[in-house]
Image (tube, rainbow, N blue to C red):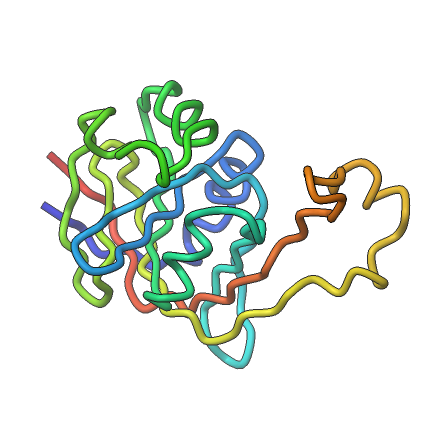
Length: 174
């Protein structure tokens, strides 16, 4: 069962959870993928409730998100197995079906194709309304050095900012 909520009423809980990790879930065709994110924010932009998620260029989730243009944000609320966040933050959907491996319970969303995840019950349904690649020259060198080490090709793995309009929010309940 789902209880509809106002996402902005939970902004404090969402912001507190982000540094520890929350999940971003996408669906392309019949494939569902989720990954742990630790960077993002919630607020109002263009007169709409927005969740902004930052996804590195190299991530499989970015490929799926570019195809789907919608996602859910799954936030720990109450007792949550912390191993879920660790596993989803270290494994790639290119190599493993994280949903199946962890035995996560998918819950159909009301407004987007990407599902909620029962084990992380506070869920935001988002439709991408803007995508921006980070402007490399705008990021100070000390931040680049700390957060963007060069990959095997000698390129930094910068983020894309996905602005998702929050079109639904709910708590998944027993």
